[in-house]
Amino acid sequence: MRASAVVQQLASKLYGPIDSFTYKGFYNFPFGKAPRANGDQYKKIWEEAKAKKHEDIDAYEKEIGYAIDQNWMHELALVTQIVIKKSDICYQHGRLLYSTLSKFIADNAFKSINILETGTARGFSSLCLSKALKDGNQAGKIITFDVIPNDTKMYWNCIADENGPQTRQQLLNSYKELLDEYIIFHQGDSKFELKKVSFPRIHFAFLDGAHTYKYVMHEFEIVKDKQLKGDIIFFDDYTPNIFPGIVKAVDEICEEYKYHKKVITVSNQRGYVIAQKQ
Image (cartoon, rainbow, N blue to C red; front, side, top):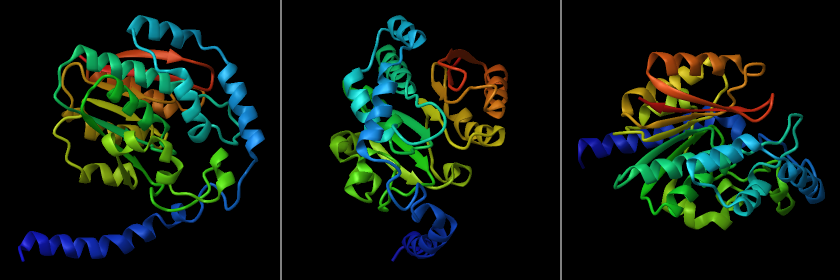
């Protein structure tokens, strides 16, 4: 047996228990051990979210020339974005991600593109990105990081909880074709796990992990040497009154590393930055 194979076998035996211990809290129903609402309650929140108008995003889609099928996005959001929480429900980043990536695909001629995401959650953003790849007939892979495991059954604080605990894969079973073709789920804290994955280039990144200055800068450290002119980083939660650390990090990154910064503010609770390397 080759030495490398021996090392891999040893690493796999050690990593499993270490991983389970490090992230044990995320294996034990992190969103609660019972459904937090019934289907009617989730649908009421969904209808309210769908009814809201977002003129800035309408204008962006018109400017870019690409827009996601909103019926498709709303159906996805019902399972992956409609939750019980104190802050407003807003999943308009799905529209922005789709439009921005679709324009990026149209403007380039890459055989395949690499997309990095931090903060998988229930998979909404990854699927919006994968739909842009599919609709654009673009080969590529989305590798997405989160501390929440992919294959552990749990309640997700969503409408699907009526069917009992499910894995993320089961939760997203209706989108299996996109999952299989484009998405790689990786469990772990981005602070430690990103450095373990080798990226020849990161054409497009969506950074939505831990919402602190240090975490954003750490994630950017992995991305910055893997991007060329024209490549994009999409930052979520660029909201000064709620996440000043994110705002500080994004402003520093764009100024020091020569990224053109486009800010789109949806409300006093949600803002986004689309940063393109110059």
